[in-house]
Amino acid sequence: MTLATDESGLGLDQTEELILVHDRSSGLGAAVAIDDTTLGPAIGGVRWRAYPDEASAVTEVRRLARVMTLKSAIAGIPSGGAKGVIFKPLPSVSGSTRREVIEAFGRLVRRLDGTYVPGLDMGTSLDDLRVMSTQVPGICIMEPSEQTAVGVFVGIVAAVESRWDTDLSGHTVLIQGAGHVGANLATRLSAAGARVTVADVDAERARAVCAQVGGTMIDPGEVIGHPCDVFVPCAVGRLVDADSVGILRCALIAGAANDVLSTRAGADLLRAREIDYVPDFLINSGGVIAIHAKRAGWDEDRMTATVGSIGTRVRDVLRTARDTGRTPLEVAEEMASAQLGHRVTVPD
Ligand SMILES: NC(=O)c1ccc[n+]([C@@H]2O[C@H](COP(=O)([O-])OP(=O)(O)OC[C@H]3O[C@@H](n4cnc5c(N)ncnc54)[C@H](O)[C@@H]3O)[C@@H](O)[C@H]2O)c1
Image (cartoon, rainbow, N blue to C red; front, side, top):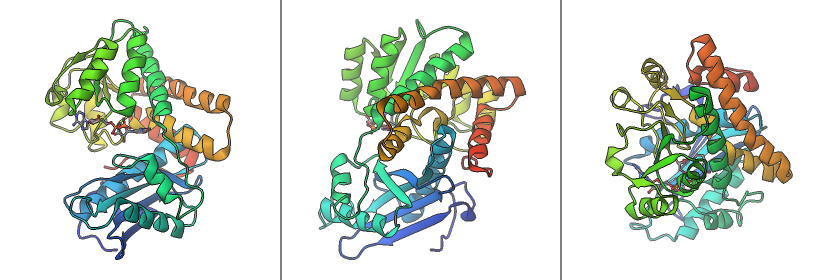
């Protein structure tokens, strides 16, 4: 395909394969970016949401696929990075059923012949994966957010210890997004003694989580700039940019959301403000580890140990960054690149 503009922050030659599909019978409009298969089949969820135009969908799918490459590589699993987006038809304006659209996506996955391993992402469900599996063998039908939350939790514990040489007791954590991962994390962080604040655009969700953990709820519009020790993004990406970085009032950023930095320069801006940033692809790899474990037939102990090792990697990255004067992002990219045998970075 030819793109009029490339706003992905990756050069156009940076994605191993980009597939854009229009399926006449179902009306499916979708893009799959296979970012890198050096280490194995490329794992990446399928996001279904409205985009202003196709170019925005392509930008997002390429950025998120790159994050998946870094995530698998730094986790040390033999998988690559990919992502899928469905950008039409929107159920409200289309005559197609959801089933027909997902079946068409399944046929697209079949044509990719095992190079792309789809999973869940915003807007898709386990039922969708079941429908896909009627069109293509080998779909991994699982909800990985429990292991994502476990990995983020051990990563936060490690980062707090690295920053303050303490455990979580008494530290204030602000969770943006009380969904699958955020709600789970709230319980874990609260049980470990942290004081939890929650914000969600779905106020009912935030209220329920606060009631459960004895937390405080704030307006989602107040998140950037709300004082806390640890800011835990578990909702949207591209939060840190030249404008927001000056407003942040936290010492640490460590959460599940993908693509937290709008550009790589965000890592330098955070360092200048002495905010420790734990790269998203380093700390949120629990889910991709769980998917690989299921596909590879690992036993529970092996999977648990590998997710638990996220804490060790977070400690190593923060220590090396401090000792060498580099950002944690640079150190984590270097670790992932060493696994891949070539340099890979987050989008600029
Ligand atoms: N689920 C996983 O295993 C996994 C793995 C890796 C990364 N992630 C990333 O972590 C994030 C959370 O994943 P999830 O599975 O919990 O998603 P989810 O859809 O279950 O929850 C997201 C929550 O964020 C809320 N939200 C959306 N926009 C918001 C905003 N601007 N401010 C405050 N709240 C907002 C939603 O209402 C929802 O409650 C996503 O960015 C996802 O891509 C998830």
